[in-house]
Image 1 (tube, one colour):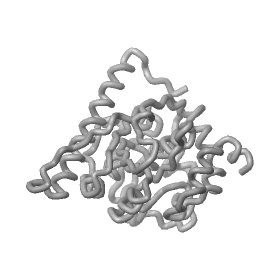
Image 2 (cartoon, helix red, strand yellow):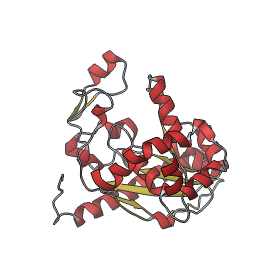
Image 3 (cartoon, one colour):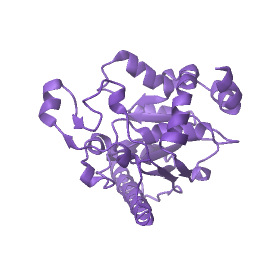
Image 4 (cartoon, helix red, strand yellow):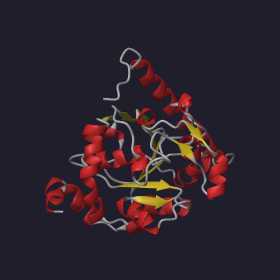
Length: 275
């Protein structure tokens, strides 16, 4: 903790002065920081840009693509925001956590910033001026075959209902590299049903290795981009919240897909290397 306090003094002061919502624990995050730093700087060599578009204070909603067992782009964003000087921000990663049966794992995730998804939880975080990130591809993105990598699955429009209601600004987070690092070869729904799991993806590490080794990935080089916020001008007399949320989901899905396509074209002459 002393090393963490020295390195992240501004972040610690910022987080320590605010309300600790949803079981967040700075000491747990401090213990995880060396691992996040290793992943960000050495394993995935993240090239991050667009952080300047995020507000220095006040609420924001970030939506991104993710094709891995865990939303690793969310954890890399969490680490990047910790290091954003002179305005670091704490990140809340909202995910459907009902399927996590292990109490210790559930507690650990909440202590580093994960929050169980609900519209009420999102609104509570927005009211507290927090940054919230979610990955609306959901389980469909998790089980997407490697042949469909970087083809976004339909965004879950219900994830946009809190922002449709509160008008909190939304930002796209585009990540290229995560689906190369952890390819999904197949999904076995019958096995998932038998085990009472939502999905059963087959990766180079799962189910062959025990937890947490089954969440490992290949090294690589990631590109992460935050895009400018897009403000919607809706006619509240004719558009109800569901209509607005659906339109927002389609817009940001298309925006992230377009940016992914642009980044893929750009690296055409630079073949992806695992090491």
